[in-house]
Image 1 (cartoon, rainbow, N blue to C red):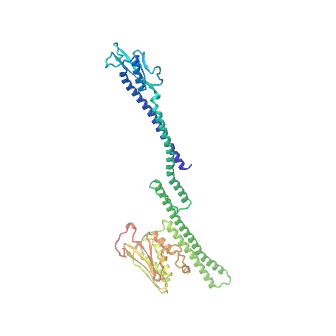
Image 2 (cartoon, one colour):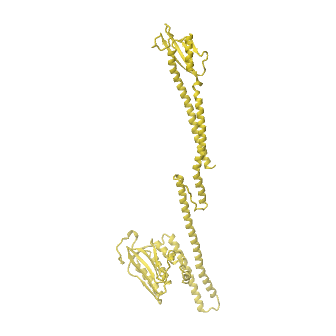
Image 3 (cartoon, rainbow, N blue to C red):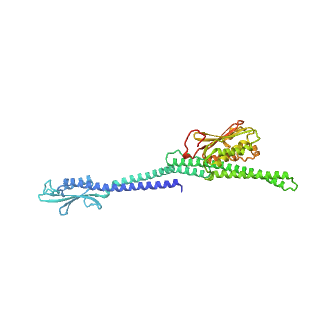
Length: 464
């Protein structure tokens, strides 16, 4: 059964019950009121008739007077002596059954101040006046009133049916609309919007469902992006592993030859080792990226001397860059910062390695300075630069501005993604300034002590 039918039946039953109850109560109330009023009128009429019919007897004049009063009032009038003997009545022998009646007695000797009815005789007499009328006469107006009430009741029930179905439709329409829209959204149509311009609870519910659909739509878009990135991620991993594996397999096949010269054998062995290290490095970077998201103990932060890290970086790359037309300079002044020294060293190593791949001549500089109570660390080169359209994607996994050049250089496109994951774990941000042909600068900020203890002591680079 539809909700519109249920609402209609409920409204109809409630309203019919109410109308019927009110109508029945009205009829009973009117009947009681009419009976009460008739008794009151009988009592009042009996009083003035007792005065008018005082001393009435069986004479023609008395009978005529009695008939005239009975005709005017419509009452059956009886007059009795004190011992209950009937003196006269009108109409005769027509005392109705089931009647309403009233009695009034007068006693006395002709004095107007007496309480009975005097027969104008010299003896003390008592007369009793009885007037009565049929109960049907009293209830005669009830028939008309009853028909009026019943007619009004049936008209009201008809109106109730019309109003109930109309009101039920009005109430059920937004519910049916919300139900249909909810089914569409549940089936995947998250672009559907409920258009109910109401200020009541239905409007609030519609707005809530629209917000839910908007959230689902955003979540679906995010999931699609994640899915696409995951597919790209898997494809990139497969590609990055396939090339080294092919190289390793080719080298092993060559090493299986019996007459392979010793020098070539060494070259193939070296090539196999390098490719295996490349795969190992790839998986290390992937594990590090995963830990940066899921491992609460990914960092071991402490206050350390930044110059100790830059000195180790200088020792690694000074020999590696020897013989190239590159100026490599490193800041080595004592400076305390708060962070994980091993991870910061890994960040600087990846940034300098990236700069070394794209800088054929000029300079590579690693420096730091105190700025607004924090230490800004930067790696700057005079290399080929990065076009602005690539800046937003530089830190994505496996993203390359020049894929062919990157693979030739042995890169997997994870270096900058690792850098960003480490910097994000330090609750700071890494930035890039670069233009094609004008070099590139990466920089980020670190606090000089834990956040709860940081104070701005100025821009001194020495913090002893």
